[in-house]
Length: 134
Image (cartoon, rainbow, N blue to C red; front, side, top):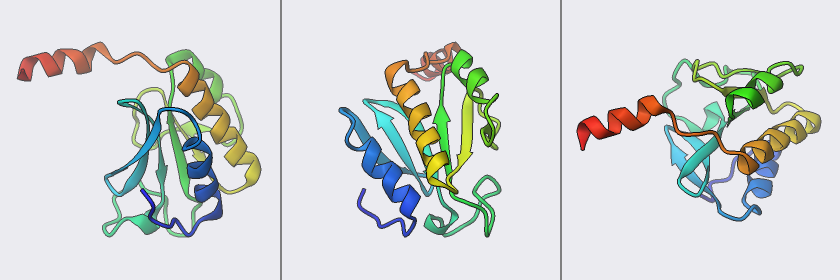
C-alpha cells in the first residue's frame, strides 16, 4: 500500500515494519493492517484515511494510533506501561498506543517486534466458528 499517510510517525512505522521479512500491509476498514504471513499483528489507525468516521477511530485533534495484537501475558505486561491502553474496540489482548512522539513510536515498534517474534495463538472460539460455516 503506497497511500501517503501525511503523518511522519505513521510513515516511519510503516517503513520500519515493511523491512521485516514476511510483513505486508493491507487496507482494512479504512486503516492499514500489518500482517506477518496470514496473521494480522496490528494496525495503524488514522481518521484522515477514512471517509466515514466510526466511533473507534482517533478523535479529531487526537494522535494517530497503533494497535498491536499480543499474547495474553505480553498484553498484561504492556498495559502496565505509561501511554499503553486496552484497544478502544475492546478486542482481547490488543493494545493501543498514541503515535504522538518518537518515544511512543519506538514503544509501538517494540510491541510489534514482540508479537512478530511470539505471535498470539488463534482463538479456539474463532476456529470453532469457522468449522460451523464450512
